[in-house]
Amino acid sequence: MLIYYGIAIVIILIDQWTKWLVVQNMNLGEKISIVEPYVGLLSHRNKGAAWGMLEGQMWLFYIVTVVVVAGIIYFFHKEAKGSPLLSSSLMLLLGGAVGNFIDRLWRKEVVDFVDVLIPVINYDFPIFNVADAALTIGVVLMIIHVFVDEKKKKKVT
Image (cartoon, rainbow, N blue to C red; front, side):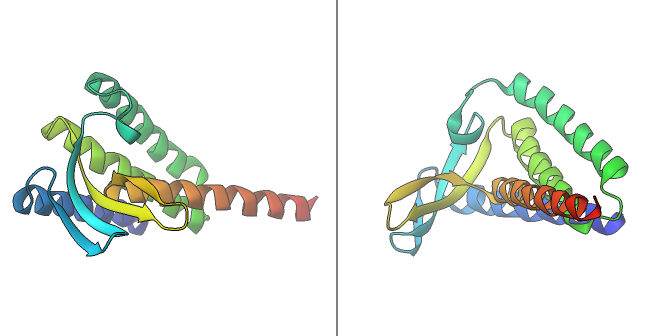
């Protein structure tokens, strides 16, 4: 079980370290191109949730995050035993939620910095950070777990 909590801790540490690097070394709005024009670093701050929704509602984020974190930990201990995929997905969710929660508590905003332009459809993806990526990967892994688990249950019956 501790190894899974290690996943969350590593996500939190990498998330906070990369955000600290951005805050210390880039001006707000500054862009550093990595693969022009598709990938870059863009120093941005978000006072809301995904895509800036609910901007300025920090009290709501505090409450929701505490409830979500408690739910993840409860579900991890009750349901994830013996399931590495579910355990890993829950710890990615935990690390991502706590990473952004730390920003909201200390900075009153979330530091975002990964800027991606998706070629072919020419879509400028919303700027994100390591915690956001962990949350997304955690959700994808959880969806995969649900499909795999359902397939196993169908084979048994």
